[in-house]
Image (cartoon, rainbow, N blue to C red; front, side, top):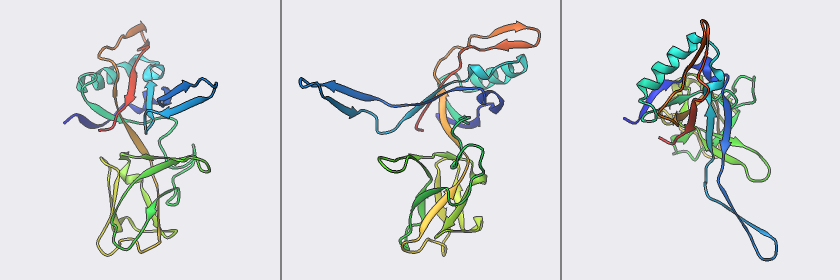
Length: 211
């Protein structure tokens, strides 16, 4: 009940600014060395979507979306303009983009994830809001038919159909588009109708949530 499977207007999100935030505690010891402790196990993204509002015609849909979400009350789907695909920017997803796990002959459910980094301390991010129709899956390096699995677009769980569970030691990979669960980070929108066909909402703060 606290999350709506509704997508924030994408023509506005394309102009947003923001990115991931982490929380690290740094203590300087008597020897001059640092001790660094990770306070958050997961990053949390923040954005300002106000940069994407350029015309009066964009303001009304944003107001309607804000009002239906009751400000900060309900979460929604947000299309991060710089991070919404399993592959590099501008490239189409392929079924080999991301390793989800390795089959054992009995495991039927895999969480869709996206990995950041490679050699030192890669970060695996759970993708909770994939675009289900965009998901492509491969087992053992070969793409399989969508009839052999289902994707829950509200949780990011990939479930193989009976008789199609990945065999032992076979890599399960996937490519996909995805949204990020988010909410408004303010209960007030300040709107400026600058002229007949120009307007802006300077601040539309959004923050990632884990529904």
